[in-house]
Each structure stands twice: as structure tokens, then as C-alpha cells.
Amino acid sequence: MQDIPRSAFAAPGPELEAQARQHLRGAEAAAAEISFAGGVPAPRPVQRVGVVGGGTMGTGIAMTFANAGLPVTLVEANAPALEKALATIGRQYAATAAKGKLSSVQVEQRLALIDGSTEMAALAGCDLLIEAVFEDMAVKRTVFEQLDRIARPGAILASNTSRLDVNAIAQMTSRPADVLGLHFFSPAHVMRLLEVVRGAATAPDVLLTAMRLAQRVGKVPVMVGVCDGFVGNRMVSPYTREAHFLLEEGASPQQVDQALERFGMAMGPLRMGDMAGLDISWAARKRQAATRDPALRYCRVADRLCEAGRLGQKTGSGFYRYEAGSRTPLPDPAVDAIVEQCASESGIQRRAISDDEIVERCIYALVNEGARILAEGIAARAGDIDVIYVNGYSFPAARGGPMFFADTVGLAPVLLRIQHFHRQHGALWAPAPLLAERVSAGRRLCE
Image 1 (cartoon, rainbow, N blue to C red):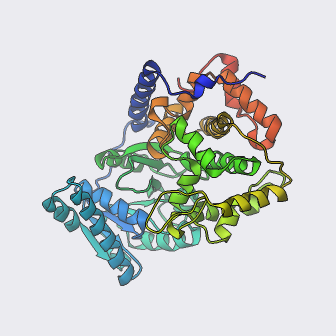
Image 2 (spheres, rainbow, N blue to C red):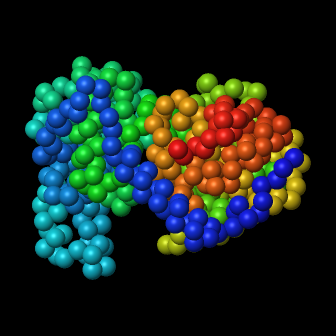
């Protein structure tokens, strides 16, 4: 069996880094351009934006548009929730001003652009209405049925869902052509990436409006198709899956995170989970449980952590523990005990694991899933996937994104390692057919 040279995981040299960054510049420009059969439609005018939901995502989305000079109406369910949302926005702007990035006048101007209401009817005059409520289809149905009744003809209805079926959401309305997904990344007023989710019925002018508006508000837009998790979160599932499996097999949380951080990831997957909140992915796993193949390996470590109330930084414990007021992850013997119990229940003999194996399994899981996404047309280009992962998931720009990185290592040796993991770990590592096709043809992913 051919091994990946250790140099593949070393920091890229100046020439390779320059090539990676040039690739990303070209990929970002290509992602922003979409083609239409029969000519380019006229975009719809967007002069006022409505946001439903004043939580972390909703407040960040409202700030995104206010920062670009667009008036926003923010709707919450009741007065206390609305007051809390507006106070959050005020604190965010005050913190930015304290760093010298905004003047007091600019803060006042932006705050003046955001109106709050507890009535959905306040959104009637908006040109774009964005739902940013809890990630639950029943909740979203209630919101979209209301938006369908009150939105003016021609208004665009968008969901900020991170993985739910945008086609099903569109069918909750009488105007599916006006519906699409706008998946902002948290914090929405800071993160540059925006996945623009194209539904089966989404009108061309709605897509074009969303793509151009994204650039207007300083985002990097990438159009993606509908599937569970779209591009970014669909790929992050096997990435974190391998991180959890590696824990069961013998690695510690800090070893997993530190190996990937040395590779160049801004934050390892377990620290990232703690920061985002482990209950978010737990909810997705519970939703998928009914259709999960019982023959496939499943790691229960993250579920056990959540069941114990360890939801991450917000509860003071997750894969790590956190001192009050601190975000510094500290090793926790309680986590080691949970991991060892899960490994024992699954009949796994724990062993010493190298940092190289951690990087290979996590990064090549991204590459393998990315190749499936590319073959299915969920992403139009390999470069689109790289733009998503560099801008939304902090993949090192110096390596060009997971697909470009696979090309620099060489698809043939990458495929060999994936085939090895398939033999060793089973069906979850079945190689994406596109990889073998490209290797056989002597082609790259990014071309």
C-alpha cells in the first residue's frame, strides 16, 4: 500500500501557497457568476429587508443588511424577545465602536435602519423576507405560511436553514418560484460566506437577485443545490464523524484538534462543536435517526455528552470543560470516561493513533464527500467547494481548499488511502466514483 508522504501535511511552500491563493481568487470570481438559459434576467429590486427571528442568526443577518445601508424590519414573537434582540444588536455595535472600527455616528445610523416589531404584518412592505427561526420543519411551516399570506407579490421569501429541504419549504407557500435558501454563517455580520440554495422551482431572477445582493452586502456567494446540509454542512458531517471515531479508537480530544490545527484549520472539529453548541448537530442526528442504516458504524460519544447536559461553551462543558467566563478548552477526565465507555460498548480496542492518521481521515473524508457532491451537481465546480470551505469553515487558504489540496497531493495517492480506509473501516468510506474516474483519465478535481 502506498502511503501519503508526510510532506503532504507540512506547511505549503511559497510557490504552492501562491498557487492556492490564485486558485481561490479565480474560484471566488467564478462562483459569483451564474449562467441562465435564454439570457440574463433582470434582478428584482430590494430596498427593504425583513427578518423573522431575533436569535443569534437573526440579529446577525439584520446587522449585515443595516451595515450595507439597507433598512431592516426585525420580527420576534413577543416584546421581551424583541427587546433582547435589539439589545444584542446594540451591544454588538457598541463593541465594534469600542475597537475603533465604527464611529458613534455610524453606530447610530445603523441602529436607525433596524426597526423591531412583534407583528408579522410589519413585513408586508419588504422586498426580501428571511426566516431565521429554530431549525425545525414544523416551526418553519408556521412562519412560511404566514409570510405567504402577508408578503407583497414579487417579494422574495428566503430560509436561513443550514440543512433542511428548501424544496419542501417552498411547497409550504403558494409561490415556490419566489423561495430559496440563504444560508448565512455565524456570526452572520462577520462571516463572509453565503450559500445561496437553489430550489427546484426557484425563479432565475430570484437567484440572480440573491447573488448580486450578497455581493452588495459584502458576502461571498456560492450557489448550491438542495440536499441535507447543502455543501458545507453535508461535508462537515463525515469530517466530524471521523473525529468522533478517532476518539473511540484511542485519540484524545486535544490530540484530534491540535493535529488538524497544525494542518492549518483555524479550530479543530471538537473545539468547533463546543463553540457552535453540540445540541445543533444532536438535533440533526435525531432527525436522521429513522433513516440511518443500522449496519453502519455510529459513534454515541457526542450524544452521550448532550444527554449529560454538556452542550459546549454555553453550558461550561462539552468535549472540554470551561472555567466561568473563559473560552479556553480544558481537558476533562469525564469526557475520557464517556469515550472509553462508548468504545467498550462498541467492542473497539483502543490504540495509539498518529497525527497523520487524524489529518488523513478527517481531510480525506471531506474530499470524498466533496467528490460526491460535485458528481451530483449540488456544487457546480470543485472551486465552489473550496470557496465554501475556506470562507465558511476556516480551511487554510494557503492550501486552497480541500479539493485543491487533494489535487496538490495527487488524486491517485489520495484515492489509494480512501480505498485503504474503505477496507479497514467499511461502507462509510466507499470511494466516490468521480475520484476513480478522474484518476483513470489523468484529470484533476479543479479544472
